[in-house]
Length: 148
Image 1: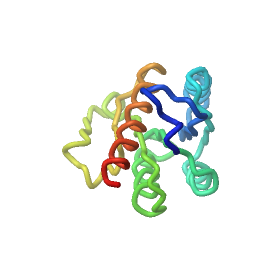
Image 2 (image 1 turned 90 degrees about the horizontal axis):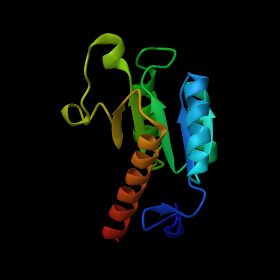
Image 3 (image 1 turned 90 degrees about the vertical axis):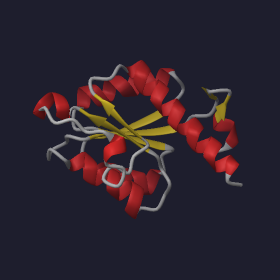
Image 4 (image 1 turned 120 degrees about the vertical axis):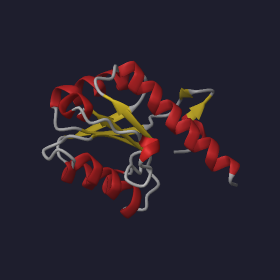
């Protein structure tokens, strides 16, 4: 992402967002909404497809659901993106496991297990998702410029 992508908190370039979620209705609804906010959104319905799209398409940010075909597939996807692909793409993880299992996850309790920028509970409104994407991208941009 270049400096023109984020100006005053408003996306001015087509920032590329990849949503990895096996629920096509959820992914499509968020894709349509995020497009209105100026994001270029692609979706992947499987972890394997999502990882391939990260490697080939170089999105600016990835949104991944924890519970895919396997209950913890999202963790594996996030770890691969963050720790193995070495591409510096921030990941936002969407979590509905507390609702499904009663078990609560907290990012600050397990930072090594959750190599993600944000861990958000589902259901999440498209507006809240858009705001979190914007904040993560701005934070990443700020930290990049401060280390230069």
